Image 1 (cartoon, rainbow, N blue to C red):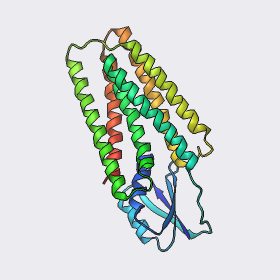
Image 2: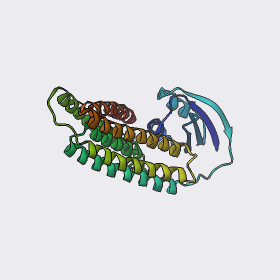
Image 3: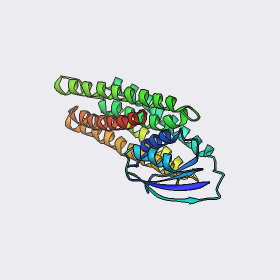
Length: 264
């Protein structure tokens, strides 16, 4: 068994990890992949030559470079059952609040809540692509990624159109109290997710640390929607809600393009 270490300079979130996993999925000589996203390192445990593995990594154009190859006696790799259980929990909380925020956002006429719900959905997609496609074929994984990416972009475009319509129209003010209350509970939910991930014994592993970064960003967005709700009431204007909604929609589209890259 050999251990080859790659530096991947453009690997900074689970999207790139999934992209690499799917690219290397068809190489039968690979026994295990160990990702260190914070340090942008990939360790490949494999048999045989590294030529095909190195070529596949370079083809991704993520700034991949082989650092070293050495023999190793390691032949067993620990299971990530507990880690998957935690990620399923986080995915469930994110998807539940996607439904809650989308519903309350529509009824309260708040684009901030609608946009935040799509951000929750985006996180669910990132976790779900890995979890739903475990054991599946490369084609299946790519198909899931494409469907998720296009669906997310479609929702974001509809959101942008609605923001423009409300910006130039005479729309009623969003219900600021609903914005604040729902976002407050979403903030608590993301806080719970962050606590669950930090409590994990595997919290130092790359995938879990990346998940904590995602959840920390969600907390910032929740605070943004709460502040927008306060400004809607103070200024008696829907503009703060439309501004925060636009910002989050941009983040959602960026995430969607990352997901689509997995399907190429």
